[in-house]
Structures are given as structure tokens and as C-alpha cells.
Amino acid sequence: MADNKNLENNNDDVCEVVCTHQDVVDRVKDRMIEEDQYSELAEFFKIFGNPTRLKILSLLAIEDLCVCDISETLNLNQTTVSNQLRILRANNIVKYQKEGKMARYSLTDLHIEMIYKVGLEHILE
Image (cartoon, rainbow, N blue to C red):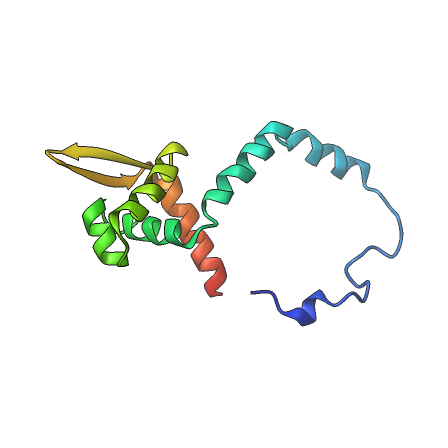
């Protein structure tokens, strides 16, 4: 978490003179993504803003699980878990595979696990 001392407004965090480095500005502008891609990325990160969904992701980063196992592990009813899984599935964050009458969930790819782990690592620093 941010330390409030670092957020004090003492103007140390702004340039004391206006001196635009146009070569730098041009270089970074050339590498920016499209505006709609920023919007899509913001929506993607919103998915990670729910503690229950993060708990589900943390479990699936360890092992593929069915709804029953996720519900039992998190001490939540299956309806709650299913609703969160539906959101994760709709956003291509988890996928499932039918195994008889069960649906076993997994992360869609390594990127999702990496996003979770990097975020966790950051807050634990």
C-alpha cells in the first residue's frame, strides 16, 4: 500500500522548469496503443478487482478444479462461484472442460497466472 508520507503535496514531484524533450515525446507517442485498446485493457483489469474472482484465480493457478471443489475450498455456495466463473469465462480468463457430469475449470493461459502472480508479488513488497 502507498505510504501517505509519499503522497504529501510538496511539489517535489513536478518539474521546476518546462522543458519538453520532443524526441522522447515522439518516441513514446509512436509506441502508444489505440484509444479503444486502452479502454479494453481497463475493462480487462476491472475483472481482477473482485476478491472472490481473485481467490478463484489463485486456486486455478495451483490446479484445475471443478465448481464443487472451488466452492468447498472457498466456503462459498456453488451459485456464487458459478456466477463469478461465468464472468471470468465471458472475459476469456478461465475455460472449462466437461468431464462426464462435471466441469473442470482452468486458466485460459499462462498470461492470466502471470498477471495474478505479478500483482501479488507487487503488494507483498
